[in-house]
Length: 347
Ligand code: SAM
Ligand code: FES
Image (cartoon, rainbow, N blue to C red; front, top):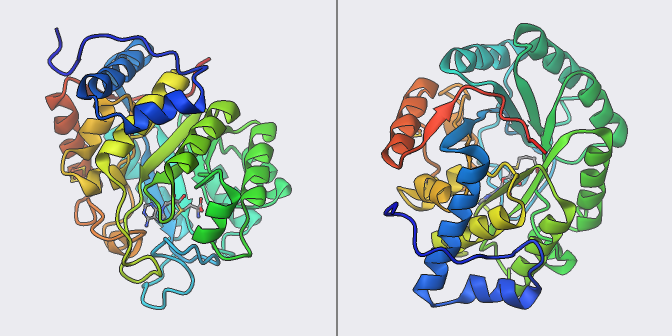
């Protein structure tokens, strides 16, 4: 038997109630914990084989008008060195990414008013013209219906917008009053309605998060049925109000990835950079707990250190090609391989 797999136990998490989920998150029974991760891993292999999809992350602006208490690029952080990539720089990231085998580009950034709908539409169209066989994922926060629609019509395929926490009081402890869970959820509904493949998710171990909050997150995600689910540990950033808070744990993150995989077997779930930051083998462990996507960084090396959401972020000194090679070997060492594929959600 595969050395990573424990004895099979079947978990019916498509219907599990809050108490059963809580038990899985809190159990000290190592056999049960190992069986959970093994079942999730088996479910991922059944769906995707040993193939891992890659998404090329282009962090194109760290200007942000928001002031989320946890985030290193919040507008109140005067010490952040701000940058914006030009359309030409973004296209050049795509070019090197395409050569390396990337068929999805993720344009992520703070909520930067410079990138109006017209500017975004122009960038999206340019990427789609040069690389028609690629998918474009956007991750640029809360915008209007008209804005989401214009970018979708221009060729954007997917949108990542973590709900961050499904509990409104908890949401209010992580964000200034201007931001609300209600608006975040409305954005998610709009994106779905327009036709994007939608990703949502949350931070694990964010300040004031309770175990019941995590259960609310799980139930929300199960109910919302996103095509993509992004979760990763909260990690403090030294220039934010949460600088003294404790980071989320790898163990909790792995259990949550496993539960989400079993709840939504077809979902695209990345093993995140944040997970790789809190543990040297975090991304490999995430894959072994049921994740099936990795998102290496394609941003120009000179701006990498400036897109610092949290402290000690990995891969800020490596070129795209180096990261790609490094990840390839890491995945190979656990029996997986990167595939050249858009990696769309399949019903
Ligand atoms: N502005 C867009 C948005 O709000 O969705 C995209 C960029 S935002 C920086 C991307 C994600 O980074 C957030 O959804 C949040 O979950 C995560 N993040 C921010 N600060 C973090 C921290 N200190 N630790 C871990 N993840 C963090
Ligand atoms: Fe970036 Fe290993 S993935 S250096």
